[in-house]
Length: 364
Image (cartoon, rainbow, N blue to C red; front, top):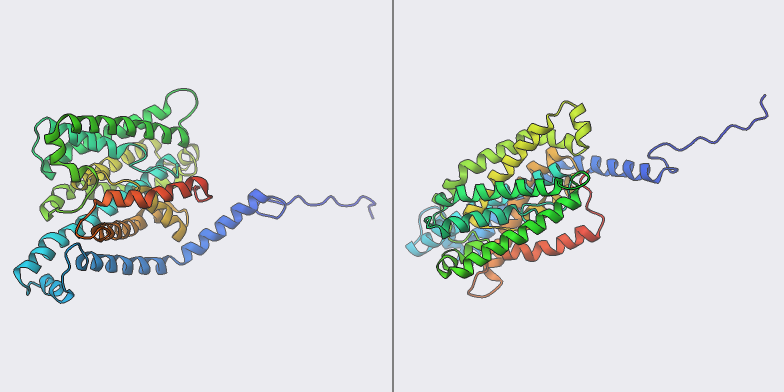
């Protein structure tokens, strides 16, 4: 029998001796718990979306009896109620649902692709690029219709996206999430300054799209939605195709390449999808900020860090958030509405501060 005492076993990853491993194991356990309640979360979000749609149809700056709303929905009401509900509130609600889904998915795509938990179309300057494209088009004499504004918005969003990627990759070292965020904030400030200068130099241009530039779904029609629908559908389809490649890229591009992911193609398709979603949404509703930042984090709290679930789930969460924000924007000031883009900024700014100062900034 040996007199040498056996060496104490070194704790492996996930054990008490390895705090980092313990945290990772705890995180995996938490993700598994969230994943197991996926059906319950889906059911709850579906109910929340239905309720949000109902509130959007029944609540507004102008009071109307619920019985008249029901009658208007089924075509058995007076002309005034039918005009208010079917011609104004219903298209507004559908636009909010569609734009919300597009911006929520765009935010999820950007955060997954850049591995930056603070990324969203507004912070990275994509919204500002689309807004500048529209401003230049109107300044140049283009008619102020949603159909005619789609392409300028798409071009502006694409140029801004590429510019942020190039700026963050320039200089020494690789593009980091912090560098990308700083590049986006700087570019957004420059583009917004140019847009504001054009509006102030040309009051006619400013008057024609004053409410649009603040971000609003008020006054939009089904024809406006139809004009951008093809671009949004293509963008959403691309997002669903990119789910698994982006999930691999979230682990690192080298590991993703070793798993057979074509990182260059994924990068290109992600840029195209974000451009389509943000550009078309901006054309119809103006630049709405912070929605793409908030929604993916809400999804992570509900279902974990799997992007194959976060991005599709954003299509449910974002419309609920935008519908609630739009409804509040209608009634928060009596007899006057404020643009929903201002309301999402009021909600999103504290969320951004919480994400930066708290512990909920990890996307992996």
